[in-house]
Length: 106
DNA sequence: CGCAGTCTAGCAC
DNA sequence: GTGCTAGACTGCG
Image (tube, rainbow, N blue to C red; front, side):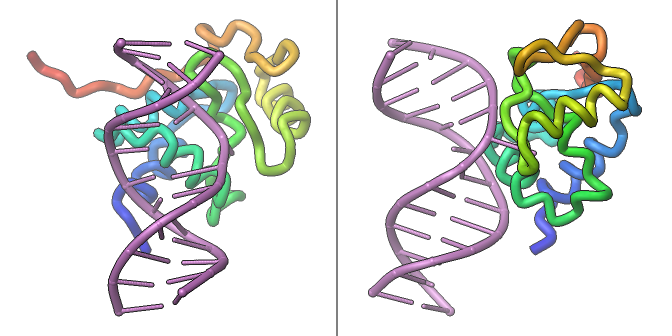
């Protein structure tokens, strides 16, 4: 089941530099799809956990959303990456947020 | 605030 | 083997 979406999903996620985070939405858009939920689904399953830093993926509103190991663990990991969190939201989300290059030549 | 859209994987028949 | 449901989301009414 090597769906292109899943494969690219991990690939894009791995392109996110340490200390930065991305959103499910941006990931889906970057993949050229609209299956925002799909991203979350893949992350939840996370068959490539050590290779797929799903903790670098957060909701579009800068919230953590969820984590297989618990949002608390996610916040801890993010803190180690150099990202702080407030409650269940990312601190300076817009600053640490990593935007994928959109190839949109109009 | 509630529903619909989109995709994959797992469970049921 | 095929069909349906659920899920770490988002956008619009």
